[in-house]
Length: 140
Image (cartoon, rainbow, N blue to C red):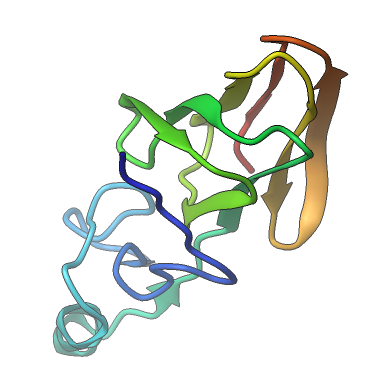
């Protein structure tokens, strides 16, 4: 079992791009580090593009949940975790945002929330045995 908890603005520098230029259009270039981004932007005379901070958060009284979510690359990931749980990344325009959590026990509640730049975009809750709460939206 692997628990990922990423709190606050996560990976802000690692997935920001530069404005302008064929290889630095918004959503076209992802950089491995802040230094890589700044070097590329400086070398081409471009300004960094700020990408929105997306956070999936799950809370509640359930002891353990099965989580399914869409990651920053658009792939689906699953994991089992104790609550609370969160995962953050920098969003890309028009990308699908999705998170769901299924209670793995006979009682308890589950609350899932998607926030973008600190503002709640979608939230859902459910209570009871093996219930599922899910939230879906489009980024930014």
